[in-house]
Length: 114
Image 1 (cartoon, rainbow, N blue to C red):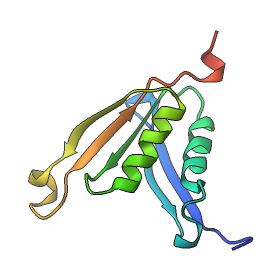
Image 2 (image 1 turned 90 degrees about the vertical axis):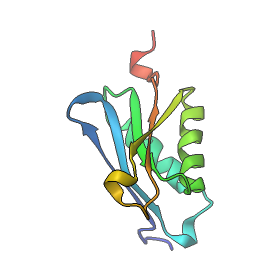
Image 3 (image 1 turned 135 degrees about the vertical axis):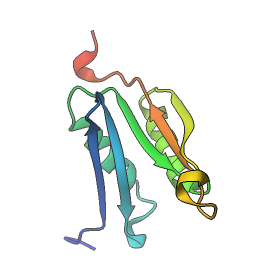
Image 4 (image 1 turned 180 degrees about the vertical axis):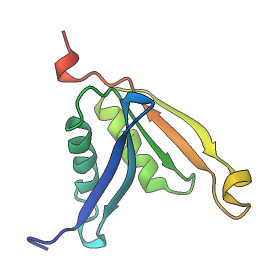
């Protein structure tokens, strides 16, 4: 695996709420799972986007791994997690799990600590 790309994370700053980073996708190759790579990528992404104090993502209720990943991010940052259904079967179709919005924050950042 040395020198290979084994994971990626993508996100964007919400245009309507500039202090919120939305994590869109997180992927880690099977061979690299269980080593903390996803957590490290999310931490690095958040740290690299200045002037943000919230993180959002959507997760389906059956995705226990992602739920644990983002709950752990909240715990590392001593932040609250708020959850609510963002997209339900009325938009996604009856066979699709709902997308639950996880809103994490506020997150105190070193540059805002006094």
